[in-house]
Image (cartoon, rainbow, N blue to C red; front, side, top):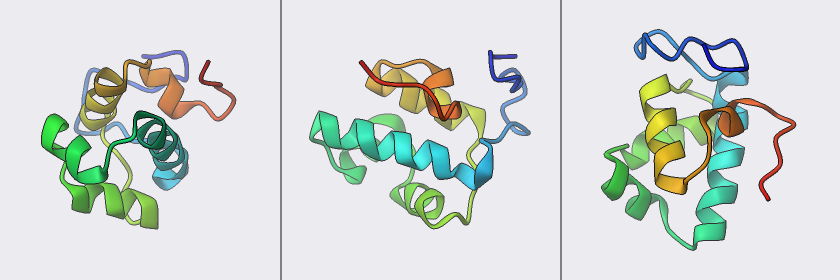
Length: 89
């Protein structure tokens, strides 16, 4: 479990709270700061751009394996994506 209480071991059943809205907001912030596109992130992480679009639209919740890929790509913790009050330095 991470600090938010989300199980990260069973990647097929873990999802981000609030339908992925927090995750997408955090992702978009990091993407914009890095000056990359959804396509570039998808190519480097293996996450389909359609998945990112579905997070944005609130149609999908995100699995822990994808959150981990994004955290690794952007060099932040998984908790950064899951907690509303986290601030990026």
